Image 1: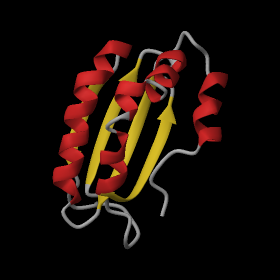
Image 2: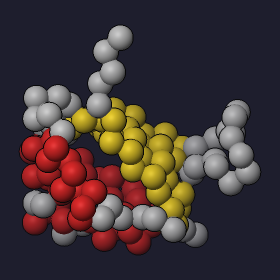
Image 3: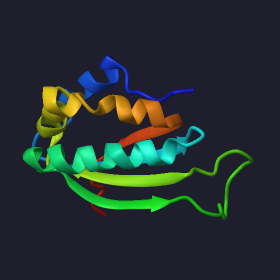
Image 4: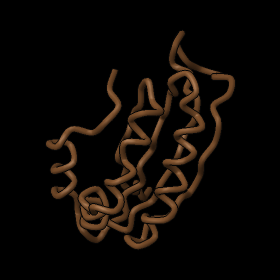
Length: 121
């Protein structure tokens, strides 16, 4: 199951416009006991993310899925806003941030990280 972003996916961030925010949607499925480890990761992110202008928009526990196929319900969702692709890229390559990134991998069974950009209608 997919958990960590691949380097080519991270590098693709550099193709996004630098003057637009990125909203990252995280869909999370925890390992047995992984929720506590993920809480440590969230605290780690809250220490290091603000140095890069990161805003933590929403973190919630998954619940009942109103519309989904079997197995598509998630344990948690986390929505995070980055000021732009440059700051997102910089955070992912920051040594202090990377020192706690293992907490994320240690806690998850599966994840979807979807980069979104504003859709102005």
